[in-house]
Image (cartoon, rainbow, N blue to C red; front, side):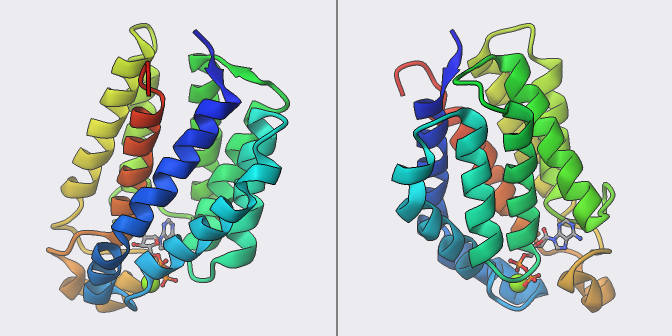
Length: 210
Ligand code: ADP
Ligand code: MG
């Protein structure tokens, strides 16, 4: 069964709902190793996305994700706006004007999004950023593609959460948290946390019957 544009729009909506619910938690995480705005940034961007969803979600999978990306780039400051914006712009570029997305096309889109984030932010694994959740999630999704889509998405979400937790003890080497040096160790990364929420929203929105 191909994935429809409506299902992808539901994913975007679910991510926005969960970011709103987790706004304070994300900001609390960012207050420990950043400037206490990650929840505010993400919620601002995705509230703007929700407002525009009716006009951007109609045509194609690529059109939807590019609309999300452009909205994020134009409404969110900080590191996360351009990074999440790039993720959705690149993923949208990979999806193009298709309306029925196969699991393989979704995998290629997620991969393109990850590569965009890495190109833009220059983060490597273990720098303690959103890449540490996104990269293992994309890898796990690829590895599980020969099974069912729900199973592959569940594997991706588990890998994202494991990546988020794996880098908590590490010292941050990118972004504001890196200014703290050793003091950043032992704190959960806000961006890796929001990325895990994103992959969980994708998993849940694409469940059969969701
Ligand atoms: P800012 O740091 O500008 O205040 P946010 O607080 O919204 O922006 O986002 C912080 C998150 O952005 C971090 O927790 C980290 O996961 C992510 N991040 C920061 N710099 C980079 C980078 N160069 N590459 C990937 N992710 C990054
Ligand atoms: Mg911040």
